[in-house]
Image (cartoon, rainbow, N blue to C red; front, side, top):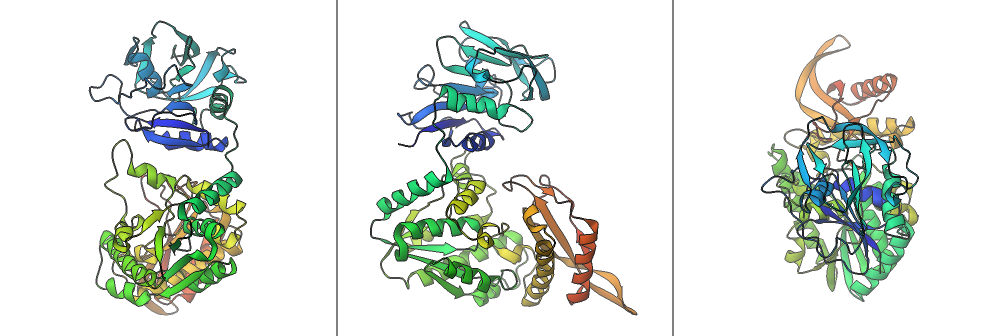
Length: 509
């Protein structure tokens, strides 16, 4: 049985980051809403309570039922979690008199406390709360203080229960990983053997058991998630997996042929389908971004359904769902109302009367790549930048036409090739060219022009949740700009997007 840590989510922006830090210690963990978590069984080694945007004093504050946890297995309350353990058990939490946001230092710590084993006195931590603990319940012992916060950390006597008012999961808490390691490996005694290799072994074994002798279809996109899912399934059931790679006419230049060839060299049983006319025809006259996404999603379902029905005796649909998608669907605040429609092929399993298998539903994006490395997948697939499901359709602002697609493909090819040839591709998380629905005045030779403008976009990120614009050399950008203007007919202006996420998104639509 896979040992694990449960993280109870109270709606904090940092909850996923706690999980990522725990998993970096090779310890498996799961996030569950505070009001909908499974009863701890023998596989659960410990529980972490997350932070929250709520105050414990609010009438609608999250109130978990910890009867099965507190005092029975190791428990760590972070920020709101610590304040809940105080407020709900006889202590007092009040609004802070002093600012408790940002960097602070643990001026005193209990060096004998196992949570602070090897942690340096005076170490920097990150505070982010409007309330503070002013009185701890009987039986609670202070184990850490900052200059402004007397109760920065505590432990309950006779229990393996701790609380900390700072965030160990963020980068600014310099020894936060050590503290989390002390909790999950020292206190909870987790072995730390959840590795990409162990995941592959466990998942292949599980897929064989789940699927038996049944046949499976999978829609390949050319991206990392669906590609890794395909290889895992191929290892488990071989030729009984049929992968379908649809050319929606919205891919990059020469991408369909190149990716299809890569899949075949990987030994996958893959079928390529050129459905570009279906998609581009359905998009004619459509300008609204969300309408474009929905049309692309609808046509994909129609094409995939048509092609999948050509495969005999299929009983399962495989999807490249990853863990952030799973968390989103059962979040504390309910499913987000702003999920982009291309992430969701809802209705396809029901339409086809298929069961669903999701080999990657336990993994974060960076973990998927590490599993791909363990599977010895080619870098040309694993190293690919993320690419949106609707493809170039949402990089053409306004109506999508064959002429605009040709212009954008040529400009994009110059930019991406330039990144590769100059050693910048792997330093950038995602890069794109956007074709704007505006024209500007220019001069080419002795002639005045009135032609299109394009935007170059390149960002650095780890998971796409936040992103910063890439500081590419001016000389490189100037060279790319000159090539695009000289070689791509209809473009006379190139600009570079220097906005970060937030507030801007990575894509323009």
